[in-house]
Length: 183
Image (cartoon, rainbow, N blue to C red; front, side, top):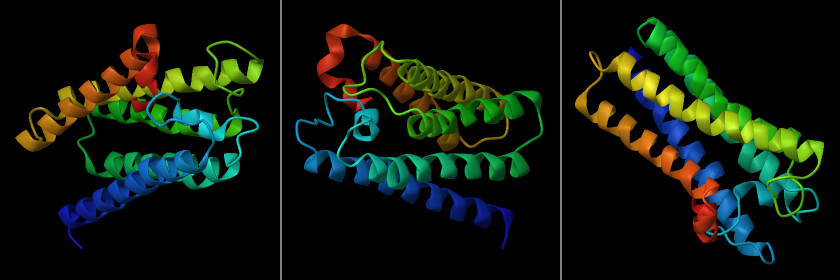
């Protein structure tokens, strides 16, 4: 199998995992979880202490996303140019996996408050690593690959950067609390 075919296959598996575990599983769990709104509530609330489907959210939602992000980073590490920007970008993107693993190891307190127990603080820190690592990693990859990546890849990367940045704004802005779950 050629390198291009391997990358396309990996990208397809990655996309399907994100679609299934990152979107479909949480939406289904949200639909059967009383008083949960996928628009207004954090995704982490599905895995919060005391949540009715916490283990399903953690092991069929959060874990597959963390594993697939890590696998994709490893694959890209082997395939992309070995420049400092690209390597730092890939390492930063691992912050996304840290956030999802943090949601499993340190589930948020009920309601996912901004402050709370030590576990909640660690959960929040892992989320911060996830979002800031994701943004920084994508920016570094965009810059590091600008000479070699196709226009479509560069545009997709810019779109991903904008999406993650919008998510950070939505989560941190009290005025947007009614749509924070969309982040």
